[in-house]
Amino acid sequence: MFHKIVDAMTGQLDESREIKGTVVLMKKNVLDFNDFNASIRDRVAELLGQKVSLQLISAVHADPAGLRGKVGKPAYLEDWITTIATLTPGDTEFNVTFDWDEEIGVPGAFIIRNFHHSEFYLKTLTLDHVPGHGRVHFVCNSWVYPAEKYKTDRVFFTNQTYLPSETPAPLIQYRSEELVNLRGDGTGMLEEWDRVYDYAYYNDLGNPDKGPEYARPVLGGSTEYPYPRRGRTGRPPTETDPESESRLPLLMSLNIYVPRDERFGHLKLSDFLAYALKSIVQFLIPEFEALCDSTPNEFDSFDDTLKLYEGGFKLPEGPLLDRIRENIPLEMLKELIRTDGEGYTKFPMPQVIKDDKTAWRTDEEFAREMLAGLNPVIIRRLQEFPPRSNLDPKVYGNQSSSITRDHIKNKLHGFTIEEVIFMK
Image (tube, rainbow, N blue to C red; front, top):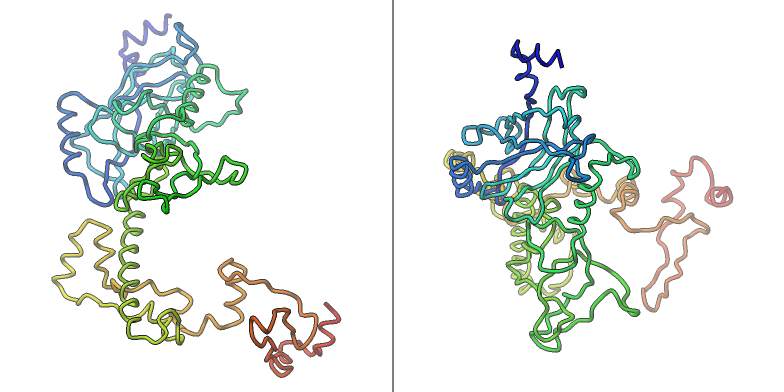
């Protein structure tokens, strides 16, 4: 008690009652497109006092009103309007100051409420100089939507692992509620801000509303088809078959429910979409060429195969195009107008044939692909020479091997074929 009076008189108590923290997050992006409308609305919300709040949860002291850990006073992210990204592309660092409460002790979790109009990707929260503990680090890596979207608060826990029996008592109820949120209740249509990891049968393979011929059986949950499972989406049933789930239109299929934290990042999704467009064009061109081909469904030569990676059109080089490319912030559009040798209508050249188009034929490359799982073949020990196939020649044609002794004698290190077979 005496030291608190001394601290108050010297002014040290106020400083010790503040805990400085750092929050790293990524503001909302849609694909690669910066959502300027969301950015403006978030700034307006800040001006109106609708901020992002954080509250520490004690890992050592429970609230007298219940078994939950004691919750501290709200603290708010500082300088949202004026802070710009200073870390890796897209990442922004914000300061936050907590009023320290000695009854909190060591924080084991925190509550975050987003009162803005748009979501953000929360990466980390770091608290410095926590009394009696030092630094406390929270690894979050999760999208945080506006608070109005959630039925319960978003809670993040420290980067400290516990066995269930060793979980601090003040955190047990928070942990239990988090598990319930992730499991879901099995009802309702899941939205993008939901964090439910639930499973359902494959009951969306057909579209019975289009006619009986489009109906498909449900896979999973029956004696005949006990498996598999898919992620539950909770879409409404079809009109003609209540056991079948309705399907999304083709153009909306990218918006099928997947927990937001499991979706592609904006850069990866941009690459995915760009290559999808390239694939469509690459598919159409051979189809048109096939109209004049006597064997449209076959490769007539290795050159036909290489045409998949060659050709296409390259955009012209020049200062104008360079300037446009430098000023386009959209990764997807950058991918589509690349002029580094990868044309719009081409698939990327496989690494193995970039320098030597016959490299795939070498024994070394064959073995590498086989071991890497790229070439699904089985290698068996030679038991007789010449090798003999068990395939039916009436079905598969002549299977007599064309390999002679001269082909392999230089690979046997001085042994004969019979000696190598005998040595196994």
